[in-house]
Length: 621
View 1 (cartoon, rainbow, N blue to C red):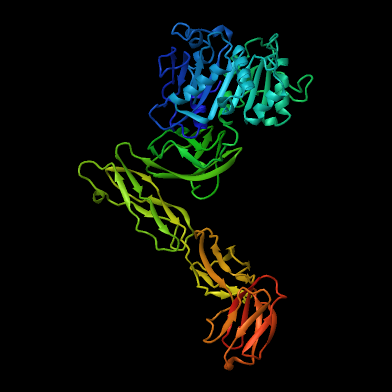
View 2 (cartoon, rainbow, N blue to C red; view 1 turned 60 degrees about the vertical axis):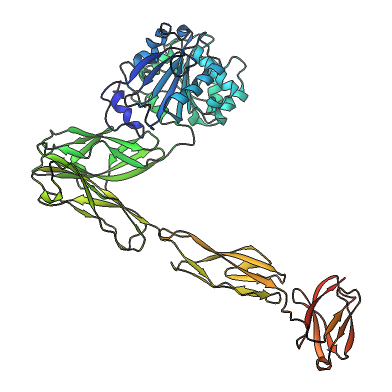
């Protein structure tokens, strides 16, 4: 069996970047002795667990069988403490919190599981995306009851591992099986071929087959040849991989057995690589446990461990690309970085190499530099300070920070001060660029260089929109005049008002009202998106106050509109318009007192306008 202390640690993003130096701890927690714990239980806390830290951990809830039931007292908890996963964890390490509650009758009815899990989340640093439940024999009956009742905490599970149990009895049907699908839970059944009723493999196949035929990735059923009612013993220590197993299509079903191959992923690796469905992430960074190595290391020395951020499982490789100068000096074995030829400060002061991490969710590459140090010298950390600038601006002045000077030393005691450089320039696109530190020399100090980051932020855009004056209802269209400081293309959007918009042209409908519009620029790699508002009013055809001695009546009018005018306005042509500007009728004012028949007009508002200065609005009843 592989050394899980080393192998598993680096599957979990955010775990400590050094190999476990000590075992995690296994402890008995009697009932009502820790923050009102509703059950006595055995806990395993991995090395590095800190209840005061913000770091959260994957968690396994292990439900025992009928032989381990008890009242949760210190004495009864020995039934769990000295058996199964609890006993194995005394000498083996996994990157999980493992909690094994004790049930009084051994059958774990769903309220007890629900209450314990909910309570544990208030006490332990549990990763909500990595909550896993395992139940053996009668403990598996508890998982079945939990499923059937579809409780809140059940729906949050990432995986379930029923072992040597029964998922057919107690009214289980496809309605209940669908709850596993609906809750996005993966399931892995383990069974002994020689197990008898009521816990033989046939009591699992209906549930497995139902899930498998909906999504084959979500259900596994492994059957161990020669194993009776103890399939759980093959799971927690991963020994099932080396046992004879049934293969092919399950008798009477359309789904196959899952064959757990020798040297395949461990059960713990399967759990880690199956967080709550929908929370999986592609690799986003590669982490190295060291950034310096000592001089005179022997060939084939493991010099660092590799980790990654994202959802496991991970594979690491040396790849071509920026920073790959010394790729041939290294080899990757699992999660270990091996230096093939040893280190000699006289010939090599640093190594540059490029790594790639891949998972089934994606890949990520990163370049690294390892400095070789003289153990006789004092280690001085030199950090390039992070800087920011806006796109298109001049590069900022780069600065260094030092940590490790002794006595009253400062940078002036160095024979050669380190220098900084970057590939970015004032014309570089927005993004992040490495600020490299190199070149220091000292007879007293080793240098540990920590690169900084130059962040070029997107530039803001400013849109200028020319003012549009008030328009009248007889105008057909209006052009929007706008410009943006980036020179990028603009788009236009009508928010509301009496009109439509095509490109930068607003076509008026002929109604009165306020036109509101937006001018937008969506941005690109170097500019932030921007928008600016504009508006203008659409009013009736221009109306002037009635001239002196001009009278109109009645208004509103039903049949005849009377217009009294001075002599100077005689023989003026008049027109009657709709508010949209359409001419309805026209004639000549031939008499000082003229009656105009408007009975033919539809009720509404109209404009009366002469070629001279008489124009007004009237209402037809």
